[in-house]
Length: 120
Image 1 (cartoon, rainbow, N blue to C red):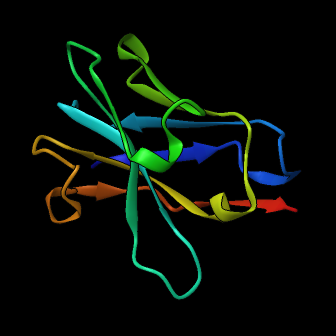
Image 2: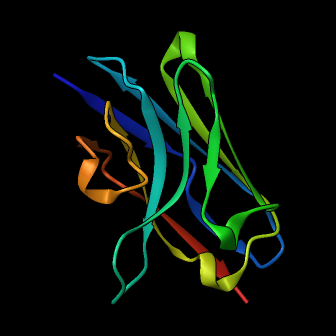
Image 3: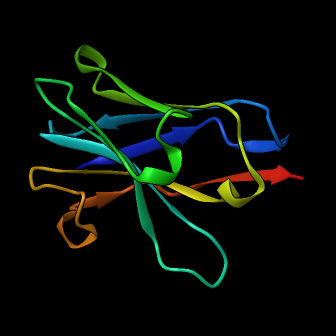
């Protein structure tokens, strides 16, 4: 059984940083990444990383501010978020799959979500 355990959310001020972590157990996956969902909005992908090449993909609005990385040995994916903005406020979800999760419909497993709140 696959489990995704997330950590690292919280309340910060605009311009601050946060680091999210997601540890996956029960399987290995080609794609690991992060999505977010703000109130009243659809869930959107934020950053994705592939195994084993560790190639990252980012949505345009976070390029240059967020960095996704992975510890393949520990099946863990991280999201370093710098220069946070009010509009980054959302519940962030870890996602894994053996299909390309830049398309939400390809996500096979979701984490429980962690709240990130950025005050302006």
